[in-house]
Image (cartoon, rainbow, N blue to C red; front, top):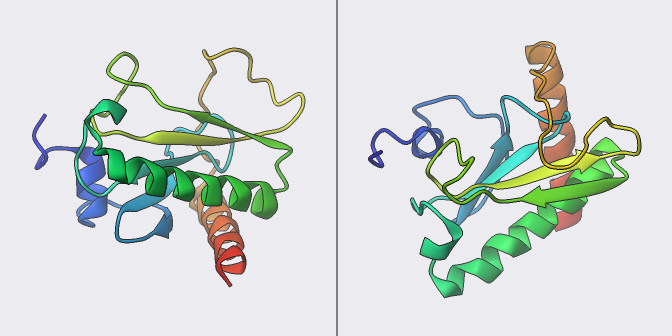
Amino acid sequence: MSIKECVFCKIIRRELEGYIVFEDDLSIAFLDIRPLTPGHCLLVPKEHYETIMDVPEELIGPIFKNAKLISKAIELGLSAQGIFIGINNRISQSVPHLHIHIVPRNKNDGLRGFFWPRYPYRDKETILDIQSRIRNAIEKMLV
């Protein structure tokens, strides 16, 4: 897949709608359109790297600093009891652009192991509400 065809690159370039919750010069995070739980975010580098092994060493720390920020924001903004962070490399990687799954977790949320069902958002109002709550939590944390 070329960078021109990459779904995540299109979101970064604003050619496709993405429910963005965070953005800086290096990365962007948006809500997964098929979330494991409401608030499931994908954090992607703005440069197109297929896997974590392709990312230059000097970017790993800053990317994971952003993963930490978003994780804290999800816990704060959505009252999540915990977070699951995951990365697929090639196998089960539905889009060949590195993306870090940051998934809110709560006891008895029904997620077991790594083979979890996906549930779409009920409606656009719900997705916009969750987007706003995570953004607000990030803003509070950056003050």
